[in-house]
Amino acid sequence: MSQGLSRGLTNYGDRDFALYLRRSFALSMGYSTASLARPIVGIADSGSGFNNCHRHLPELIEAVKRGVLAAGGLPVPFPTISLGEVFLDPTSMLYRNLMSMDVEEMVRAQPMDAVVLVGGCDKTVPAQLMGAASAGVPAIQLVAGPMMTGRWQDERLGACTDCRRFWARYRAGQISKEEIEGIEGRLATTSGTCAVMGTASTMACLAEALGMTLPGTAAIPAVHADRLRAAEATGEAAVRLISSRLTPDRILTAEAFENAVRVLLAIGGSTNAIIHLTAIAGRVGVPISLEWLNRISDETPVLVDLKPSGDHYMEDLFNAGGLGAVLAELRSELHLGCLTVTGETLGARLDAAPRYVDRAVIRSRREPIMPVGGLVALFGSLAPGGAILKRSAADARLFETEAAAVVFESLEDLARRVDDPALEVTPDSILVLKNAGPKGAPGMPEAGYLPIPQKLARAGVKDMVRISDARMSGTAFGTIVLHVTPEAAVGGPLALVQSGDRIRLSVKERRLDLLVDESQLARRRAALEPTRQPDRGYRRLYMEHVLQADEGCDFDFLRKISSSQR
Ligand code: FES
Image 1 (tube, rainbow, N blue to C red):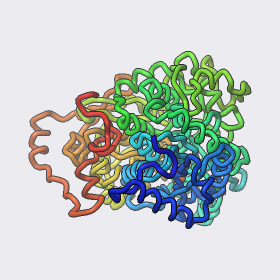
Image 2: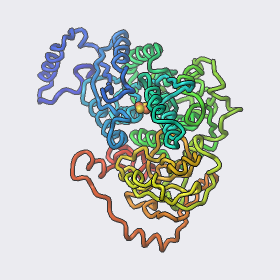
Image 3: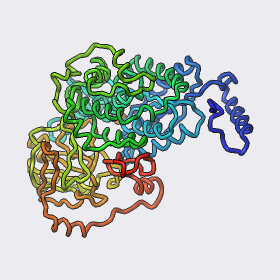
């Protein structure tokens, strides 16, 4: 099989000419003939001036290169799309699949024998894993690592649970404009991904649980010297991957995904991660259902005490023993025979893992934070395809609720009316947002964390049941039902809800029901307007092919799995 520079030649109808021309152009970059004879490790660089979380990627990539060279390979970085969470309009999720296509096609089209995927900010790791899984080239993930925390007065701050916490206090009139401006400069003070168990940290942990990173690397802070050593070791491991021919599909098995779901629940991870895991699994033909999530959730305790579910930050998880300590605690429930990117099994990894554990951050199974998993799927007449609630970051007093809905038709409607003093809402109301799902907004923005109406916030209301087809930042806290499927924009029952309708939430029964009779709903259904389609470009492709949340919001033509397999 062709290796290095002779892989996948440009098609001129003359192989020898194509290789001669490629070598000649590669020599123009100053490489020696000896260097060009080495196996090639591509380094997918998702750095960008529009991505604060990836500010240190140039330094990381230099360290990866050192490792590749030391192991006898030739490192060749190449740029890909970068998704800086807060710099994208309307939402980074709209572009996750585009980035995954970029990664897949560039890994396959360019002559590399293995690839190091360097990313971190929310959608970048899912996109890289989806792309690599489809490309079929040996791949290893290197995550950016989390930010360090900052300080404001006597408060320890970390993006972005504290961003939301202080913004809620500002909205409630508890802190001044000057104070919120001071906090703004203290929330994100280093490079790296959000400092709590948000989506980026969750996906970093899941990449390690899946076996796609080196052991012990998920939680190393972005600016810690260990992160550079991990980058160097990742470069070396990438060269070893070439001879082992260990392609992602051999690592990303059904058992590996079950391990990852268990870890997701034990770390109190982000709701977004279930969408991303489903999408990655779909690329290798592994079905993940929400019923399966509920089964694992009922038998998996929450062990990690990190915000937004708990009190600590990612740098504390690193110092407490890292993900290895969490995996060791879950050992009896994990599939230990799963292969990892180093060629060793998960069981062998755990045998070699350091033993120190800080129990303030990583609890034992005997004394968990919650006896059951952090996420739960709900089903019912309002969500026939399912919905998600992060019960570990919610107010348990609201888990059994029946109340009248206050409905917002869209994000624009929400922005216009939520703070209107005339809004008819009480602390017991259920807030409902429509048209914020995969096709609705479009791109399923993180808008599920509906703000508490200002008049209630000022009266001291801190949580209410909120329901939408949107996603929520992994850093948010509240009794928030998300990913209602099918979404309103494709005519799901959510589209039919009107203010005053009664809704029943029962976490105990895993139910979410709209208590309106069928004849009334049929009349409303007949009056629904179709969603407008974009005329052209990527947005048109997106609208025509994006799947619902229960199928990972991937494009139908990118999955290896058909709907009938699920
Ligand atoms: Fe990049 Fe939160 S903004 S991880």
